[in-house]
Structures are given as C-alpha cells and as structure tokens.
Image (cartoon, rainbow, N blue to C red):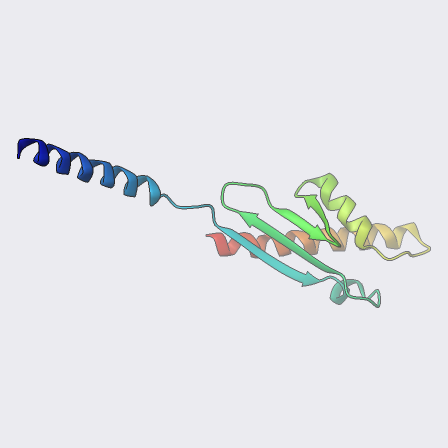
Length: 114
C-alpha cells in the first residue's frame, strides 16, 4: 500500500511538471498582405506579404522569394517591385514610397501581435 501511494504521488508530480511545460506559449505569427499595384499602378498585381513572429524579425515575401526586414532587404524588394521609368529622380521617389508602404504593412502585422 505504501508503494502504491508513492507511485501515485510520483505520477501526479510528473503529470504536473509535464503539463506546466506543455502550456508554455508558442510563438505567435501575424501576416499582412497588400497588392502593391494599388500604390504603384504598374498594371499588374504585385502581392507582398509580411509575416512577423513574436520575438523574431519580420520577413517580406514576394513572388516566391523572401526578403529580410533590413535596409538592404527592403531596397532589394523595392527594386523587385518597381516599375521602370526613364527618370532616376522618379525611380528614387518611387523606391522611397514603396519602402514607406512596406514598413506600414509591417507595422500593421506587428500591431496584431500586441
């Protein structure tokens, strides 16, 4: 009988330990998507998705490729999205507009995680 009580007590302690470790919160992910054609007016759909995970950096996805949330990643993504214009001044302004809207898209995704 003493052995049975000891076994039950051990089982209860082990179960509580297991349940406590199993109940830790998993990382939460939030994604937002935008058709950049609404901003660029390039004549075709250009869907960009940004996904943010709690405790991790956000990642932009366009046309099957991932772009990190860095200055270089945003610049590369803006180049991939951009329309071709003759004037470099227009290109620079367009690139700034694209990056500004990509950051706003990321902010919307991060807002959901709060």
